[in-house]
Amino acid sequence: MLHDPAQLDRMFQALADPARRQMVDRLSRGPASVSQLAEPLAMSLSAVVQHLNLLEASGLVRTQKLGRVRTCQIEPTALRAAEHWINERRLAWERRLDRLGEFLSESKDET
Amino acid sequence: MLHDPAQLDRMFQALADPARRQMVDRLSRGPASVSQLAEPLAMSLSAVVQHLNLLEASGLVRTQKLGRVRTCQIEPTALRAAEHWINERRLAWERRLDRLGEFLSESKDET
DNA sequence: CAAACACTGAAGCATTCACTTCACTATTGC
DNA sequence: GCAATAGTGAAGTGAATGCTTCAGTGTTTG
Image (cartoon, helix red, strand yellow):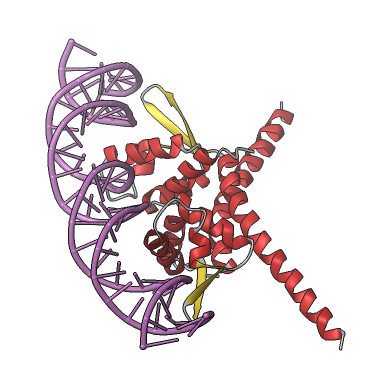
């Protein structure tokens, strides 16, 4: 399920930028062309393309060009990998807390 | 559930660095002091403290100082917020795919 | 009390980032 | 074929990042 650490790195790096997250957000509602992605963003088309290339390199977005328009869509597997990383750490922590809680209430029973 | 966009920004920013993710990973297995966090990392203590301060500002980690040692632990609510952001986008995309699939198989039925 | 310990903070420095502009290449529509 | 469209690529710039070193500050411990 894509546990390549370098890939994970590029993914979190990609998600770190607000403009890129906004692009992912837009794409989560359906595919879009580069100019459509650019439209709500207060920056040049060129800047958007640079962000997009990063998103593609990170695996979060896939694009294909038909004629002169590049259509972009979300790659859910990559999103799932990032989600999974966070989830595992959080669960590890929470399981630890649970065990600690049990331990405390048990040792309370033993006078 | 902490939807402050600036906070989300700081969180993803914090997760973007491999050293900081390694620190979070370590903390998911239980609390640690600054020097314990620093131990596996190939950088100065000072650098680690700088990362740690970022992690704390992002809300991902909480610390408290007793005597001369600062003990750090994970703040699972923050992790959950990041997880949630990703999850929502992924689900939106997947629901869209599902609807599309239904639509296609339905229109196949109508000759 | 002195030395060791566990950080903390400021300054500096090299690299990376997020842009910009401008020039350029394919497509498409008239 | 020519103009408009959709995007690409390279170079440059200023700000942000990720370190380093070094000089502290409190806190324990022998």
